[in-house]
Length: 367
Image (cartoon, rainbow, N blue to C red):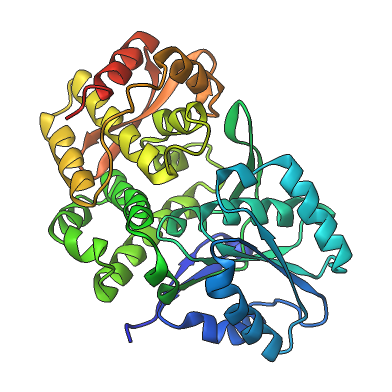
């Protein structure tokens, strides 16, 4: 049994804990009660059809056994569930289950479920409590920070809110059933947290890539703790992305565009962000930064099994157009998070579209 790690997202009276460890779902009843989740009002667990057969009964049994009134809702796995239509369906289910203002929504799943369930919680009765129970590595990023949303056909996460959870309960045992592709995709955001904040952690990921891909418990627990620590530190300083928090978007300007153009089904989020981070590293070098940024970024992402080449069949014009719809497109200039060194990034609001187009074309040739 690995140790249970705990850290706090510091947001004054809205601060909340992140628990990381093995077997934490067994402690869900106790932890929910400790952090103010009501046993008198019904709660709704939202999950997807891949996670449900593995973990829903377990969480349901633990919470019901602890005296919570539990209802469940299951959505199809995948990015296509982050839609206004699915939001409406879930609100209907919440109403039918009798959820009131003191109720809570529980997100059991990966980033898609967390974003969707969180937005249900943010919008139902103008906001009810919610809890994140992530079941993927990728969700160590999305479950922390309170950004919740659904997609529009033209842009990812464009309909959303800031709505912080009451707690994040990260049971590492849920990760043991992940397929290898999902493991690698999740490690994309782990590496990203090092690239923006902590050069020593990037070197550690480089040295421990094999253990991370094999879900070695101690390596994984440490990596997720480090990743969540970076996210918590950034969010504590800039909750609503008025400045510093934008650095968390390293690789996301290109990555989100790739997801949209590929129809949200060809590339996993972490894979698209990996390609985007290679693009950001290339951009940094083109703007005069050391070549080492590109070399290290490429080496570490490759070691954890991530793609670095942009699929050639994706249309460059469509990718450029999708970037214009991205939330990080401001006042006619392209906003990019550009590495200045390993472990340090800068927000560049003056990147020319022509240079970005060159980088996109180069990414199709990446070897």
